Structures are given as structure tokens and as C-alpha cells.
Image 1 (cartoon, one colour):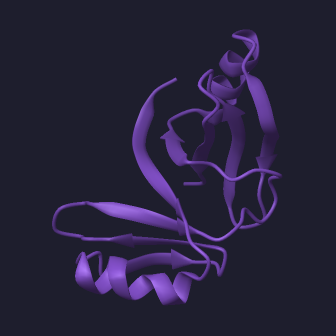
Image 2: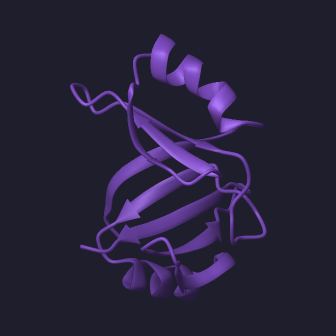
Length: 117
């Protein structure tokens, strides 16, 4: 698998309440998206970003990070071949991404995602 970008997924109780700190104070003022349960804030000059997450909309567990892969289908096949626990199956989500969640050997849940072009 090739990771193009990795985003931290910070669990928050309320995205709107947390937005002031991350967008204003930390300067991550560009809201790339906000689906109510997950939002990404970025500094467009530096590329620094964070995703705020209240609760995953379709997976049973929340991911600590999101890894943006160049080929999510190949990444899924490799994860299965290596015997990693699949927490959420390979799915094309209604919001336009194809993804799966896998548990790393240390227990961390990772969202492996590919956006549609």
C-alpha cells in the first residue's frame, strides 16, 4: 500500500464547539468538509490539517487516523492476506469515498480511504 496522506482523527463531543480552537486558535481556518459527524480543518498555506470526529456514521468503531491510499482495493486485499482484523469491510460510502477500517497489531483502528476522482 502507498499512503498519500495521513490525517489525525480527533474524537470530540461537538464539532461546532471544538471548531473555534482548531480553526481559529491553531489557524486551521479552511473547512474542507463538514458532514456533521466528521469535519476537516486545514491551513492551506502549510497543509497542516486535522479531522474532528464525533462518531463514525457507518462503522462500529472510530478510527484514530485516516490513511489516504492510492489503491484502497489493493490495500484491503493486502490487509486480509496479512491476517489483520478488518473492523469495517471495504465499502463505497454514500458520501463518495471507498474505504475500510483495519485494526493495527497495537490495537489502533485505521481508516484506509480513497476518494473518487
